[in-house]
Amino acid sequence: GGQFKREVTVDGQSHLLLIREEAGAPDAQFASWADAVIFVFSLENESSFEEVTQLHALLSDLRGTSDVALALVGTQDKISSSSPRVVEDARARALCGDMRRCLYYETCATYGLNVER
Image (cartoon, rainbow, N blue to C red):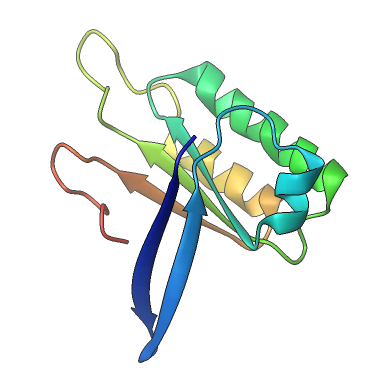
């Protein structure tokens, strides 16, 4: 994974985000370090959606998530006539509701949908 910095302004205040890109399951060190987690899955890939559920459960076991801000992001970039959408909006929103304190977004880098959110 990579590490990135990004400055954002929220309610008139500047904040520096320190972002770590992680692949695979979180470990105890990551779980204790994170203030927020963004789970990303592909809307045309059922197994990527199921993996998010497993990763959230593991994070909850390591740390609990009541004090961690969560976001669930479904990407549309690989959806096509030969690779249709398989994860519907209602299922993704239901998972987000189960996670609590979770925001849900769909994004498409190809068309710029919610890329800056």
